[in-house]
Length: 388
Image (tube, rainbow, N blue to C red; front, top):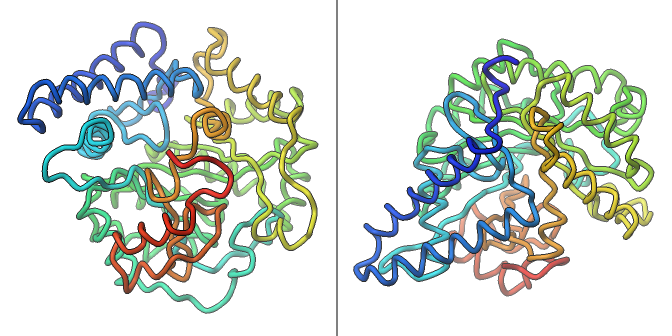
């Protein structure tokens, strides 16, 4: 197995967890005037970690570029971004005097341009209209969030690779040490040279949308011939450039069978990606316009949860990609969107609770972060789950 696909499992994973806990203790010790508050805050972080382990089945982590990643939304260890996340979580347990809590993740649609017409696209109505966000707009928005503490940014669209030169400029003018930067892409036009340029500019990782293990089915879903091959090639280029690499799957009801899921995982294994992220479909964007019921039913969710648990906990799969399945955690614990741990800024620069909870809550270009957070809270945050 090559150096970009090492995993910590067993005692190595527990040692990584212990080191992260030690870092939380160090940060708490310097943050709280009263040591008793520091102890209580760390206890709160430990309880949150316990819930994560229970419902996300965190039993392994990927080692990429000397940093350890157990979740894509959790900054690699060690890093200033992880310190930001830990301070935010300490503050949730016991408020830190004079501290302003930031975000774990800022999701941001930076372009309306895309060559595909994906069946599930949540920005379908906005695609291929005139761009709104300029590079200065994007930089200004990111800097507002970084000033409060921001662990991760994930750029989407549209297809963000269509703004490749702008991406390099954005990364070159942002603090990529404090914050991990990611791209969510279809893989379109991501060749080896571009992947390396993005890595050199400070990009941490990339998620490639791949919705089937079968090329014809994926291309049909994306309404574009060749989409499957582009996605697979992009995943290889990204991994070889040293980027944390993931596949994102939005499974349909018919896809939620053990056979489909295991064949998809075998494809992910062959591409040597580090993560597979499963996102449940929601009736927004193109899915809403069709008027078709797309939400997964109880039997489909049971199949996904069983698959997730087996891959994450089975000894036979310790060298397989890490599977992230947020839906299971959200149903049991709640959603971290709505400005609590993450939010979404659309291709018009407007605040939303998340990409799938669409309700424009003011402009991130002209308004402050606090105004956006207040508007999201007033709009009830996540539409599907309790916001935590």
